[in-house]
Each structure stands twice: as structure tokens, then as C-alpha cells.
Length: 392
Image 1 (cartoon, rainbow, N blue to C red):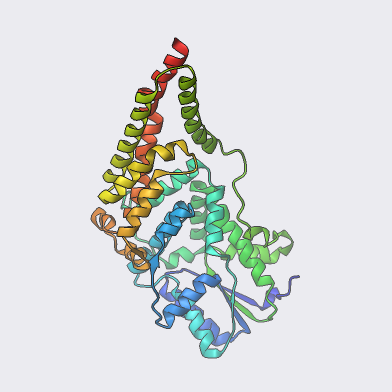
Image 2 (image 1 turned 180 degrees about the vertical axis):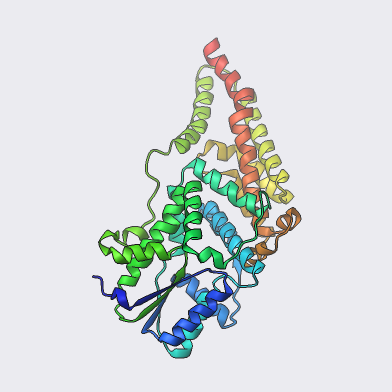
């Protein structure tokens, strides 16, 4: 049921790293003194902001072990990169990311005005985005993020206040839509709907909403046409990707094919002892090399090499998880590693960041084992064995 009166709502579109936005938000709250202030935060981010405002320091160690176990490396990687870019821009203009939200919270606490949290959980948003992206789009999106991180491409001076101009926002959003349509759909269009829906559910009459300027046009369209809003519960569901996962099926078939070839050779009376030795040795060497070339500790490389033969046979396991887990025991990752990403100016700085070092080990080990699986083992072991079975 829609309760909020449209004419009693003031939407303030902000740039999340704008000093002017902070003053604009606080001035509006003090001047209007609304019944409630709605802010573009979810419960988790709000709690972190409040603790930070209170000067509460927590154990900021990040459990990379749990991230790898839960198979959320891609989600963590994306979240970290996006956090880096916002922190980087904020540092360039000497404004902390989310300062306008902090300003709104401070003004509300000063005046005793309640706060409404209207944003969707960030984990849900990013996971929905990743689930909707195809392989090519993911690769293109990640390449763009990493290229920007490493300083590739042209650098332009950005006027933060100009980004709030509706014409500039339209151009920016269209470019984002062209580059990553699935990400645009989830990060922009879906959240426009979610933010608008949450606003319409507010029981208070006089409301100020503090949202990113990029969301303001979409929110207003939904508020003017509430019948077009989707069910908000549908926007909170993390659906698996639709369609047949051909890549996963193909990768799963590879180890099955290897096992079938071994069994066929065995039942045809062909001595496969040497072939099994080759399979084990090549797998271990490539797992070890992939890990060590990615800059891992020797212990992590040994673990990656030892588990490589087993992970090739088991399609649900990856050697990189094991080498990454081992590396995480020696390289403790903290929230400060994410914050320090904004200070990265060179490849050396990036190399010294534990987040990327561990992720690099995971990727490097898996890459080494993938080369063994797709290139070396077929040519050195399985194709010759196949020829023996069917070639007489």
C-alpha cells in the first residue's frame, strides 16, 4: 500500500564525494525539519558508518578463508574494486565517500529526527549483478576496472559538481549502459525501483530523501508512475543465472572424459601406470608453477601442486582455493587493505597489498592447472592413450 504523499517529499540528489552535497543535505534538514530523513544506505553500511562516527574500532580482519570457501571470490573482487574507485575519487577531492550520508545522520541526531534506511543490501545487489552477467560481459567489466586501477587509458579531471547535472548524468548512464548492460540494470534501474518503492512505503507525511544524483531521475519516474513498480520482494531474491551453464558443463566433462579414457585403457589391457604417473606429475608441476609465478609463499605453491591432480578429476574443486587458503594464513587481510587501495599509485603499491596478492595466487594456481588440463595433459597423456585404445 502506497502511503507517502508525493508533494510532501523532497529528494536531494548528491555526489557521494562532494563537499557541496554535505552542506546541501544538512542545510535542507535544518531548514525543513522533516518528520523523517530517508538515506541511501542499507542496514550493514549504516551500522558501519555509526561505529565509525563513534570512533569504535573493531577487528578489521577479513576472512579470506571464508570468502574462498563460499566461492565468493568474484563478488569480493568486484566489491573491492568498486570501493577503491569511490575512495580514490574521494581522496582526490579531499572528501570522504559517503560524507553526505554522515552529514544527514548528524543533522538528524541533532534535531531528533528519525532515519529511514531505504537501500537494498549491497551483497544482494552485487550478487544479482554478477549472476546476470555473461562471461564476455564479466571479462569486459573486470578489464575496465583493472585497467583504470592500473592507470591505463586517458585520465581526465572530473568536476564532481558537474556530475550532478542531469544532462551529464544522462550521458554517463548511457555510457555505463552500453559498456555493461547487466550491471546497469541491477545497480541503477533495479535500485531506482527499490529506492522509490521504499520511499512510498514510508508512513510519514514530510520526508527528505538523500540519494545519489544518478538515481534521482529514475526514482522520480517511479514515484510519478507507481503502478510501474515491480514487487520489491522480487528485487531481494538472489536468483541463479537463467539458461544452460554450457561453460560449467564443458569444464565438468573434461575430468569425466579423462577418467573414462583411463578406464577404457585399463579394461583393454593397456598398461596405464606410466600415463597415470605423467598425469600426476604434470598436474602437480603446473599447479606449483602457477602458484609460485603469481608470487605465493612456497608453502602455498606446494599445497596447490599437491591438490592439483585431485582438483582436475573433481569438477567442483579448484587448486587455487587451496593455495589461496594457505596464502591467507600468511597474509592477513584487513579493512585497511581496502582503504589503502585508494593510495595505490604504482604496481609496487598494488603488489604490496595483501588482498590482491591472495587473489592473484588463487587465479595464478588455477591458470596453471587449467593450462595442464586443456593443453599439456591432452597432448602428452590422453590423446596418445586414446590412440592406443582405438588405434590398435
